[in-house]
Length: 159
Image 1 (tube, rainbow, N blue to C red):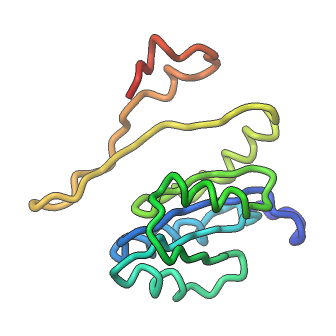
Image 2: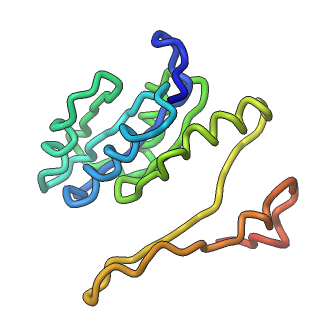
């Protein structure tokens, strides 16, 4: 396991959460299970009307910091509020209904050390829950299209 000094947080992960009681636990567990452990999680319940906050608070890990919006602010404003509270060298976003691969933060940190002044993003994968069951993960865009590029206008367009 890749561990940095316990008093230094390398990556702050932010999660705005609204009515995601069925997904937020898996998102948080995907962080706890990372091979890279020098992170903090800042998660904000955005005035959910379900048990999202209860699920978030069920995790007993000192790296998890829980915030609550008394009035729904929406994901953008909530992300901004969480970024202001972050203490890590880097900030990563995790949507409340998504999960990280077990080595994602380790790979992210290695790339960040190599390119300290860069904005880093990675491939996008998606899956969908349907009435007939889960449609498995699939790559949305081939990550090799993005490697080493500084002008993405031709490849990415405006999505």
